[in-house]
Picture 1 (cartoon, helix red, strand yellow):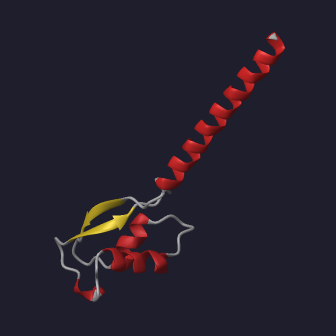
Picture 2 (picture 1 turned 180 degrees about the vertical axis):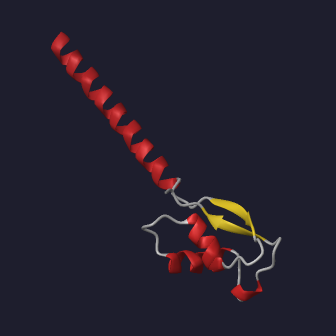
Length: 93
């Protein structure tokens, strides 16, 4: 009888551990939304120079600049004004 109870207890413990592991993996997947920081445009800044300061070496700068345009609803990148603030995606370097 003790062996049977031990097997049942181990089975329940394994199910609980698997459920907790599944929850942790799912929580990590949910938190993959991009994080943003705010940057103030300085004199002579372009989306390309701003992107160059915020990307890692393995990031495609063209796609990052496109994302800057999309996130900030920028239709004319030449119209950036010093003092203007824009949202910039945070990339882990």
